[in-house]
Amino acid sequence: MCYNPYTLEGKAILITGAAGGIGRQVAVECSKMGASLVLTDINDSGLQETYSFLDVSKEQKHLCYRADLTNEEEIIQLVNTAPVLDGFVCNAGVMKLVLTQFFTLEEIERMHRINLIAPMLLTKYVVKSKKIKKGSSLVFTASAAGVFRVSVANGIYATTKCGIDAFMRTVALELGPKGIRANSVNPGIVETELVSSGQFTEEQCQKELKNYPLGRYGKPMDIAHAVIYLLSDASSWVTGTALKIDGGMTLS
Image 1 (cartoon, rainbow, N blue to C red):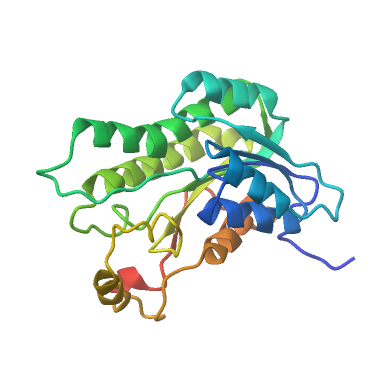
Image 2 (image 1 turned 90 degrees about the vertical axis):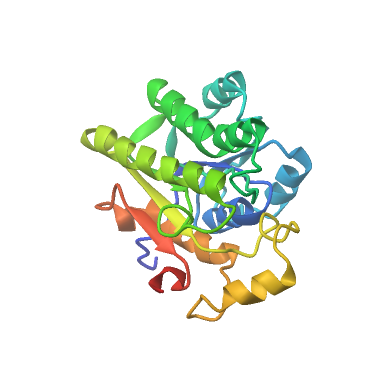
């Protein structure tokens, strides 16, 4: 057998926001690395499609649960139903560009509820119910936005991502003595439906691309490979780290 420090064989991993985009790619790649997965999303049809792409060559057992993570009771039910975990990836998120003078309380609350409060509550109940093993890895999808860079009309989203990074570091400090690690991935612009939903014009996309020294936007695979590193034993001495994956965008 070939030595592979990045293997996830024998590990059970929970992934939120698994119906598409980065979450789907993380799920597919983790299954290829041997993990047994618990996938969740509010989009049931997308979730089932992701499930159809998963690798089962190593006899993994994969599960899907539709859950609205803005509902605390559904988070509790998800945690109670899930097996004991070796890690999770808090990936579910929403984004909307809106100038400060025009955003509404509803928009603030929605983005905070999905991007920040849901991961905080999920972490709480996973730890409280002892559904996370010693030596496990918790990975949060944050962003370069807010944490490493600010941009016009992105105040609400950036605030949620700064918040999740601060929470991640607190969790790393609190759970370190239990051998549980917490880290985040902080992508620049990644080619997903979240970005291609019409919020950016083609002209804006081409202008922004000039800020990327590697000459392209990210792909979900780029983020998935980083998540695998953080979930695996290859990163066993890494905790409290915000891993920037931005094609060099924040260099300027």
